[in-house]
Image (cartoon, rainbow, N blue to C red; front, side, top):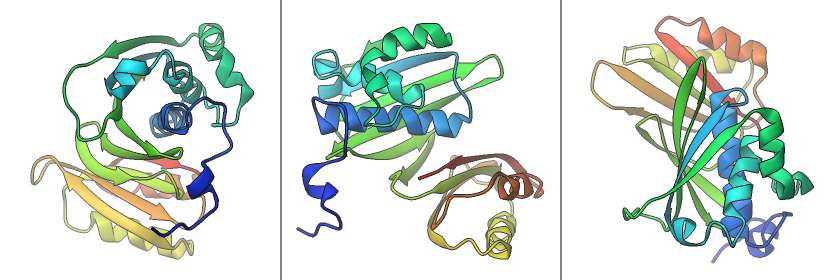
Length: 220
């Protein structure tokens, strides 16, 4: 087995008790918030597998809410996330599910406010690492280990090239890219992992490209 970092072995700096059930859960919540682009007002948190069975005892519940409040894995405020959510006006509900998922540590977060909502499926794969496997019905693979942008666009020729050209103009190197669509010719999703955090001005330029409807980012 190959490790790229000592943290692959001992896990991240975190609030316990479990890297899979606590640190991973916090990262899922935080990435969902990043993709939403703002603090949600409500969250319906569907839990599967071992998340559904042990979420109270292992701190998965407070970690997910802490992530939605933008708390990192090592943030002491995770311990008071429930009280902090009440102060921030974030309503939340945990819904244990019985359906079988591909991975036992899976959560589907449906979050929203008066302007819209978003669905994110996250998996805690161990050692505090996660994968996002679905956003608003689009299948994808996003690790959260690199800065990334998600671009919702019409399924039209030239959209991918125009976004890539915009990034190249700003000397942003693409490390990984994939495209998902629910149905040909309708809406598609670009997931682009890059080597550096993306400035807001670049996102604004991408959002002005024809047939682009929404741009979100995840900083690292």
